[in-house]
Image 1 (spheres, helix red, strand yellow):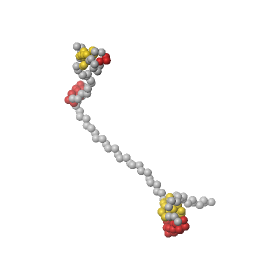
Image 2 (cartoon, rainbow, N blue to C red):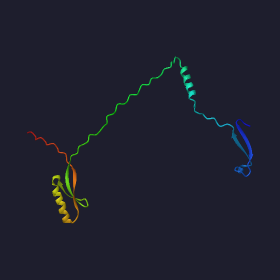
Image 3 (cartoon, one colour):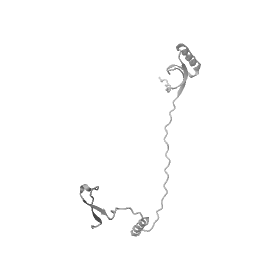
Image 4 (cartoon, rainbow, N blue to C red):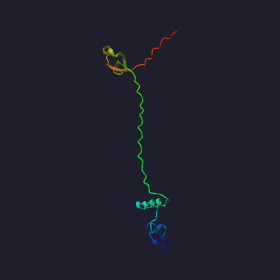
Length: 148
């Protein structure tokens, strides 16, 4: 018998290992290999920590007072200033295929409906009136007259 290993001699005729010969040496460990393991005892860890503290010269037991963390000041949210876009309302006359046939001012709704009826009679198709919002061009400030 060797240290920690048992040698077993066995014949295996016609068995799984018969192609390798009649005698086989199988090694079997008595003990499982010892691996490094983590210390699970908190009491033992506590003792180690106290021993380390007591080994320091002149070390008095002091309780650390934790200062509460200050809350961060809330950040100001950045918001983009919304650009006000001026729009005007118009009446549009459209065909059934959504082709624009004409535009009329908002105050001239009756004229737009009359135009749609006129086109419907003339072309025998469906025409309808729908509001349109159009972006107005920014007015440029009036230039001051040049002083001569």
